[in-house]
Figure 1: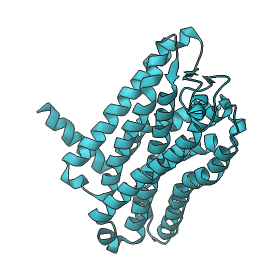
Figure 2: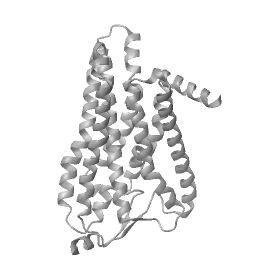
Figure 3: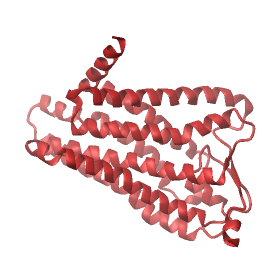
Figure 4: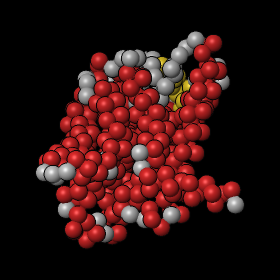
Length: 310
């Protein structure tokens, strides 16, 4: 009992946010509120379009609908607290609230990562093994892939949350960030963080890099297959089915690798922009990227909007 009390001697944390200047708070509030509303509306439209159009009842759009749902939850974990802090003089978050936010940050962020890997596998099967696509990507297997993608990240997140809860916070409670992330929290601890850092470097890196390697492997196989297609039109058609997904993967993993593939001790304020990209901006841009470059999805959205007008 004494150990537990020592661990939570810091009952709350102060989130410094994106800017400490008072004149920046309202403009940032308006900007983030707009991004949040666009994110919710865009991803909800994608989900509704997919489930209301029989032509979109395919594995690719099944995975996309779950990616959109995860993006809504992911953004909701972060942005509402940011909005409250923009309008509040006391920019605090409770100890329990901070750990809860971090838990869902990693659980949902890694679910996004796994779903992107599953979508890459789907494109690999569609292009490299089209005659067996229906058999391989049957509904049972699709549900299984989504279940694994959305459940395993919770175990990863739980591990890091429990390890963080074992640390002692007794000095500063000021987090130089706009959310409760693992690296800035570890830097605040006044107890040994050796175990936490070892787990981050080993298990954390494995969970982060494995989906990316699956995506890279899928696209290398796709590229090799496409290069064998004799006609330019055939190559363009094959690549066009992957363009949207590749754009999202580049945006998502580019910012994540910039933030997390570095030692905890080197984490600085400069990483805030990269964190903002993969936590907030990617979720907002996903519906635009997939709908603007996909004729079937655009048609599904038009049908959905025409029904709403009637």
